[in-house]
Image (cartoon, rainbow, N blue to C red; front, side, top):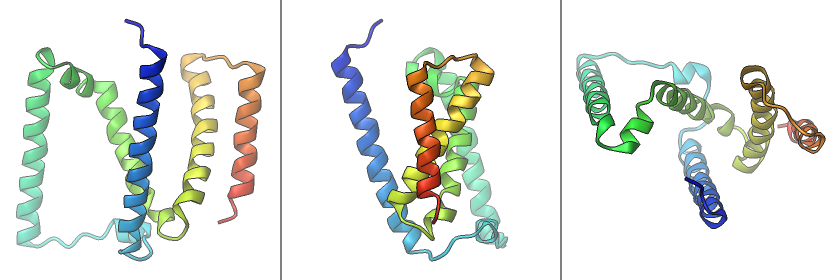
Length: 157
C-alpha cells in the first residue's frame, strides 16, 4: 500500500500539532512543580496506602498488556502496539519524555525543543548508520552538520 502525499503531509501536521500541544502542556505542568532534579524524580514515600495504590496500578498495567496481546490478531493497532520491539521502543521513549522534565524545569520549552531535536537528529543518524547501515547523501550530512552547529548555538542554557 502506498500512502498519498497529501495523507503523508496531513500525518506530519497532526504529529507536529499534537507534539506542540504536548510540549506546551508539559512545560505548564512542570512550571507548577518548581525545579526538578534526578533526586526529586526518585522520591518515593512508601506507606501502606501508597503501596496499595501502586499494586492496583501495576495490576492495571498487567491487565492492559494481557488484553492488548490477546487482541493482536483482531485489531491491527494492538498488533502494532504490542509488537515487542515497538512496545519496548515506546517504553524507552516514555522514559525519555519523562526525563525531559528535569531540564524543562530550568529552561524554556522552545530552546529545549530545538536543542533536543538537533541532538536527536545527529544521534539517530549515527545510530541508524551503525545498526541499519543507512547511508546519507552529502546534502543530508550537511543538514546533520547544521544540527551539530545548532546544538552549539542553542546549548548555552
